[in-house]
Every structure is written in structure tokens, then in C-alpha cells.
Image (cartoon, rainbow, N blue to C red):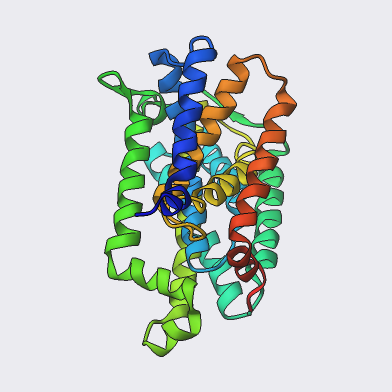
Length: 315
């Protein structure tokens, strides 16, 4: 493998390692065990949402609704638990809401031929409006079942359960996307829909499935967020929209350049959270994080512009 090829495939990953070494040397307490575990916990939410978005993008579709769908699902979970519903049932309902939103997005895109950019923006607005309608803008807060809170706050040994769950999701998603027949069909649909259709792949079903997985990831993240915060607010997932997109785009610059991939999205999420944490420890102003995030998005899109254009506006 040539040096150029190595840089193309692993340059961003190596830059992430260099960033980690720099922060370890110059950011006080960055390399402490509590801080590193805190970074991994924060990555968990972003990584799962980014993986969902990645599945949609693999099929050459965008999902700009996942953050508000996550908030809406979280609000429903909080409302049900506050009303005395068993937390297990509330969690299932929350995940089902995410799945339903994903299916709805898929049907809008494949049957009504609405570009995914427009369809998912509309779904995002609907989910956001419903979340505020249900809460009246006030979060659900309560002393909830410790078993429910253990999901995101508990530890197995010294390792947070939240981190273990994230790694399970990452491994399953990676194996599914690269080793399973369904995963190959998703990849084929995104790379060349017409060729995939001619080879016998049900591309319409693949696109629906990709968007459904994105919605399911939003529902799962909603459960984890509510468990971690012990509350449910209508904007609890809103900040993850740009972060999730940035993580996925950053992931498209490594391992399989210009192609959405699960491992890349996970590493992208890790780099973004690590950078944010490091900037805080270095004493940087809050707006520096926004500037850096913008640079990451612009640079990543420059590498993957054709893929994003196709995903946003394909009919």
C-alpha cells in the first residue's frame, strides 16, 4: 500500500491519535481515568445516533429528523414513566416511536418520491412540535426506578454500562453492514441504485430499512438519555443533529474514503467529543467548539460532496 493510499484511508484516524497525544500532554487531567470514562460516556449517545444516520446515508438518503425524533421519543418515555407505566414498557414504546418515524420517512421517500432532505426536515418539525405540545415546554422530572437509571448510570466493574452498550451497538452495526446479505444490499443500493435494482435487489425496501434503522437508533438513544438525565425535555436531543452529521461526515474521510461506514462514524464521534472535552480543559471559549465543528463539517463535505448531493436531492 502506497503512502498516498495510507493517508487517504487512515489520515483522519492518525490525526485523531495525534490529537489524543497532544491533549494528553497539554490538557490538564485529560488522560485521567475519570475523564476518559466521561468521554466514552458522552460518545455513547453521539455514536449511536451517528450510526443510525450512517445507515440512512449508506442507502444514499439523508435523515435530518433523528435528533428531534430522539427528543420526542424521550418525552413519551418520560411521560409514561411519570404516569406510572412500567419503565420497560415505556422504553419499548420510545424505541417503537423511533422505528415508526423511520418507516414514515422511508415511505415518504420511496412511495411519494419526496426528496429525503425535505421529507426528514418535515418529520423533524413534526416531532419537535409534538414534543413541545406534550410537555408545554417543561421537562418531565422525577425519582424514577433505580433499575431504569442503572442502564445509563450503572457500572459493570469499573466500566460504565453505557459504554458497554455502545460498543455492542457498534459491533453489531459493523458486522451487519459489512458481513450480512442485507448489509451488502444496503451498500449496493446506495452506490448504484439502478444497477442494484437490475440485479434483483429491492432497492425501495432497502431505503426504507436504512431510514428505519436511523429512527431505531434515535429511539434507543432516547432511552439512554432519559435514563442518564432522569428527566425528559423537548430539546434533549437537539444538539446532536449537527454533531451526528459531523461525526458521520468525518467518518467518510477514513477507512473507506467518500463512503459512509460504521467504524468511521464511531471514530468520528470519538474525535469530536475528545476535541470538545480537550478544548474545555485547555480553557478555550465556548464558541471555539462551534468554529471547530464548522470546519470539520466543511472539510468533510469537501471530500464527500457527490455522495451528499445524491442523498439530499435524489428522487
